[in-house]
Image (cartoon, rainbow, N blue to C red; front, side):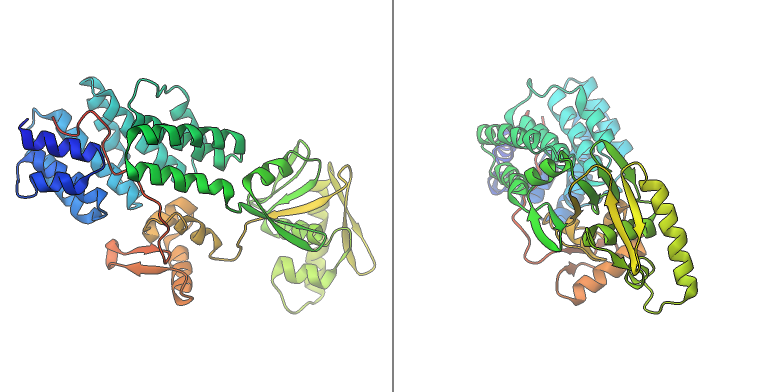
Length: 406
């Protein structure tokens, strides 16, 4: 490897993409193309970065399998940063196998981290935890350790384990300081902000207040009767009753819980559960049937008592009834929650992450754009959506040491 390539690679490892470009901007050999691609990725020009890395992968000879594998890993990281969640995971797995076989354990670990981060984004927490469970980051450089702890913190945040998330973020901050990569330090700082950002909204006795992650964790450990509108379930102590597949029953129990200890009139329950402005005998008959179904499901933890005007909830053991809801609700709330990470998402990636149809997501995006809450750029398949202004959340577009190309 010549001196310019070495110097450019070291500049990239230190988080200095402009310094790297000064050395290789006019070169078109395979190593220079790869380094230029990574530099452009760090500068935010993701389409150009992807093009350069693909050219580099084709330019490397058939015997340069390690360098080609590193290009695949870099391209996968760009796909993750641009929220191209449909990027072929098999190519990344094959690159990881190649890097492992040739002793490049650091870049192989980075490939593994990329796949785990993708699993986190699409909500497959169990798979992410299994992939991370037997992995020891201690032999790796500080940048790799910081990424490892960011993933650990991400899992803990989604599992509502505030103490574990705080400890992992503390380790990630220390590793990022040792790595001396500004973008990595910024990413850790942005992740840490989740601990001081409202995670949910508590509705009880006709009042509302925002909760931090620690408050949510404490609430779930309490003896209260909780209607969890974030996960669409009801819990009381150790008993958990999922209602995600029963939206009408969940709407009924939420309405009863928000009014507790008061009753809810029948007409109000019909409007809430069935979305009907006009009430007739068929609606009342349907309400009686669905209340009966709800009584059967809640029997271990609560009763649903009929009153003269409607129905009232009566928990069996809990002295408090609360509703745990998202900080912002509505048809587009879930879309906004993903766009809040500051990255540019495609509608297909949002549909994959939300487990919804792309057409449904596109309708939500159009409504949000009309309200000025999101903005789009690009056309066709290159169209991306983000929230204005973009929060300062930097992704780690850097292959960790050893140097990206050798």
